[in-house]
Length: 306
Ligand code: C5P
Image (cartoon, rainbow, N blue to C red):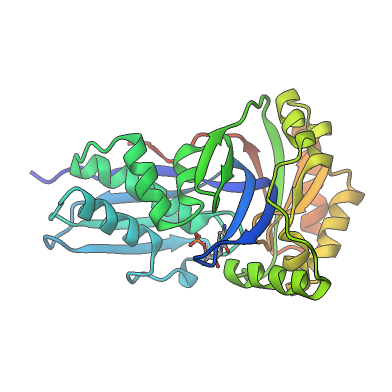
């Protein structure tokens, strides 16, 4: 009898604060970030493979055509790493259904990798501990551990070292997508160029106390103005049109407007659900965004739904 498929739902992330420090020996930037998981989900299904040892993926949904299905796919890499760590020979057929924008700065590929670890662990009965899954996740990419973790958390190092944040409340978000994605390495490289040109002194990354206090209070009116992203200026140099999108959000009373992660997705904090609808309608009607979505956060990380 064949094993039933395992389905995992996995969230998008946004960065409420992102401070970028110096580059380490491997070419990664030291960062300090506040990750926040929101209610936009990809779904990953893991079925036993027809051919023993075969690991394959199919991708459907939003932006599916831009997602590779070879070994560079982060879900495939996740399955391979878990199989290797636990000596699993059976293989898996993965199917990913995307809602999270591809190359939008919301960890879509990383979240699919996190979901694959959870799904394959269940399908193969590997019994990996949470710590083991987090360690494998960190080998795949800087944002993958957070997609397992979920909620609101601080990421340091490359972003992969996580600690919980004292935070309360639930927030209403609006996301404005631009046409086409931005490459994360290209945005970091642009920031490096800008810093070299201005001879800026590069200091150790840190999360401002103002943002931590705002999250503890759970007050969106305090969180909005405290949000900050060091990558925003670089993303805007590569996509000057983002400025107008952010300004429009502000004109419609967004409590905080910023590019999330390496962009180009713009993130807006609404005061409540009605305000989120108004903001979303204004952004949709402006023609500045290819798609506008609403979401709430925080939500849990990758979890089995069947
Ligand atoms: O870790 P991940 O593979 O997702 O990172 C993608 C790219 O983003 C890296 O190759 C690097 O160019 C850049 N990056 C960085 N510093 C970080 C995270 C990512 O420079 N902390």
